[in-house]
Image (cartoon, rainbow, N blue to C red; front, side, top):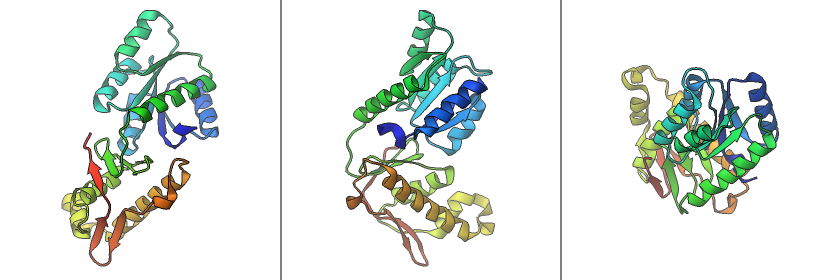
Length: 243
């Protein structure tokens, strides 16, 4: 299935339904995180980048319609699927006018949801421009390889990638990176933390490339190089789209 290298977030306050959908989708190879309200979802989205959000409409606090409207404004390319126990046509129309891509009435079978995910993924992939270089997207939270593999970045990784891609082809010193990451606390920041963080980022890139059936591994090269005793360099063509 094409969408299995994409990360999905499910926001559902019905614990039984949430557990069942997550169990079935995770068991079948999807990368899915679960939240029970908007605040929990926002905490996840602060550290992970998602390609598809599945939202229950009847959530406590901020409801799914409001969340969908907000996410569509913040992330225009995010796939959004709405779930609700209400099947009235007016509710469906309201849901779709918020910017949602699809609408399912509960109880929903995980196989139907998986089919909608696959269909939505194909639409997203079709709408994405073909690229021959690395890209930094979603305000720096996604790195996309030339073969189209999406690597979600943590907050720290996003900062590092912004610096390296902005100065692609040039070495960025460890001290500069640490100053941006740690700010006023840079004097007490252990440089080994940066080394470990970049090592994990490099491993993440390799892992994502290898697990993607779409990746042309023979044409793949690690874009982040270490310059001994100085810092790091992004060696390949890259476009920071800033969206």
